[in-house]
Image: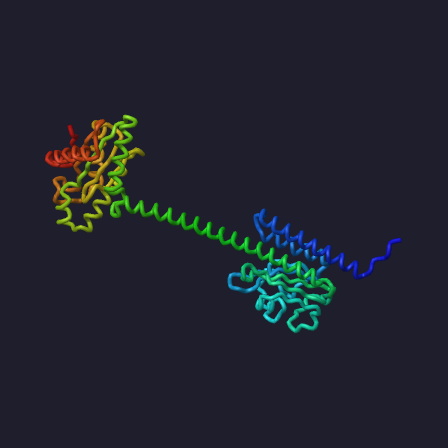
Length: 367
């Protein structure tokens, strides 16, 4: 007949079961945290598991925030008065604060004999607070409160300390993940700002500030692209160089400020007259403009006459002009299959010279 088991034997078996359970919980914690999208979710499950297994009154997890203060992150059981989970722990004279301050485990067999104890529930008799440290840095505090003084036996406390090491590792993993995520987000935001700035700088670098149309740099890039496209597709390309007639005399008579306003108004008239999406107009320099159109020299001449008419219709007063208002002259050059940017500009410039000699307010085409 089997002999009845003594209380000591039962206690030994119970302690062994607790140690085995804690080891298993620690292994599950690490495995779960490594596979979880949010490692701190695993810590919430651990606090609930500890609370159930040891029939704790209170099981809480405090994390050290960026200021070095404790913040109540996870909690099972009653809390101190009106204190809410998620708030900073402001009770400096408490066993939890003492553990954080000293970095040492705090085992209090009888809480009523400890002046730092803050009552959460009348049933609490014993408290075990463990610092969560990783490579010498305190990342948080695990607070365990029980109604049975025998809950935290020496073997169980030893296993809880090992579990605390694993919890600290998970917290470290969560902190690193948070920092990496934050850094990634900051880098992405910085990259977006840099891209936007680069776009803005490019617009500024290729836009004429006075007339608000592309500048000579953009014109030169556009001519090169148009000629390359012509060689690939065989489409027609023509260049028009445009000059405001007797602009120096205008500045002498009315001043440079009004001269600037004239250039802006002429630019708007040119842009409006060139209605096709593929038409391109830019400020070439001084009182000169340039336009690139997808048509042969004959078609470009028709467009050049349209530009002259568009500027005349603006009717900007110019007493030193033959017509009494601002006009333009246009030189046209069609791009042959071997045309280069320089050769095309030179031919259009010669045609512009002919338009000037021909009485201005007209267009001429390069033969």
